[in-house]
Amino acid sequence: MVSLALGWVAYRMPFARPVATAHGGLEHRAGAILWLDGPDGVRGLGEVAPLPHLAERELPRALALLEALRGEVERGECAVEALLAGWRDWTPAGRALRAALETALLEARARRAGLPLARWLSEEARAAVPVNAIVTARSVAAAVGEARAAMAAGFRAVKLKVGGTETEAAEVERVAAVRAAVGPEVRLRLDANGAWTAERAIRLLQRLASEEIELVEQPVPADDLEGLARVRRRAPVPVAADEAVTGPEAARRILKLEAADALVLKPPVTGGIALAREIAELAAERGCAVIVTSAFEAGVGLAAALHLAASLPGPLPACGLATAGVLATTLVDEPLLPSRGDLHLPVRPGLGVTLDMAALECWCREREER
Ligand SMILES: [Mg+2]
Image 1: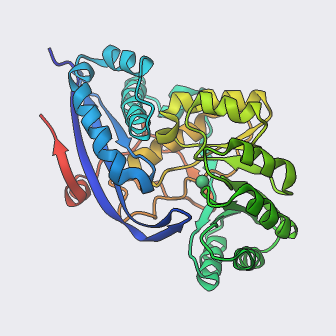
Image 2: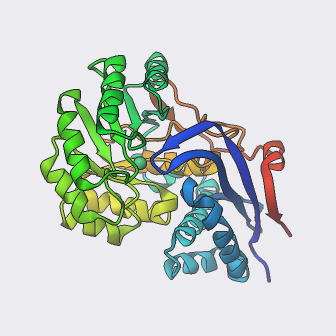
């Protein structure tokens, strides 16, 4: 007997403008929206969003796994809960799918309780989350232009993607130009997406010591935890682990090595909201900060990340959730745009977003509905 109806739509859409990262330019985002419809008519939404540079490869794997699990999922919410508890596939595809199924389950429960998901997760959930602007343009002039636009929009924190320039002198020049453009009051972060070696990172960050960098995300490749720890010890800039934070076990290793001052949490990478909250607790015990960041998901995944961020206790640095404008469309009717550097939580129960069916139709690549 089917007691939960599963449906999904895979999408592929362009970025609003190409995003340059150390992984190269991102031009398209592939992902999938899934839903679980309960017998009481309550729908839970989730988004399958492996990291964008992996998505073309990982999304088909995630959808094949979803189809393999369909019989189990459709047995009902208890079966989904058991699936999540006994989850075995911790590949990027498996973690992204786990996050989507868990989001759909949690959203249905929050909606039944009549609460926004963040409030359902925590009574002390905040109503708004501070967010950073993101500057990705490669050329110095264009990066300065993006940084000035962020200032005009009221952001108090800016993250600059680095690691894409040929020479160390060019990296330093670009960072210094953006710092000069935003002035001394704005927090400036760097994100190398794993592009540097530890030695290059240390040299560069020493040269950037006077630029008051708030932190550098993932200066070295995700699997180089020793290198990350070395950068943290020797560079005059706090270090955040991002791509390396693939779940509580990975977080424990990072914390044990004292390799980071902050951990970046992305539900599709950690395997869902609950595991991200578990990591946040581990981090808090060790005096390590956490930052919630989107993975350039469409609106469902972005809403899930926002509710996660709002549910976390304690001081929260600006989060990387000002990304609704990055894609051609968010696929939802409520695009979750920031206002003066804050992103306000939707007040409706659950995730608080509804699917924009016309947009979903427009960017649909494949669908499965029964
Ligand atoms: Mg990052």
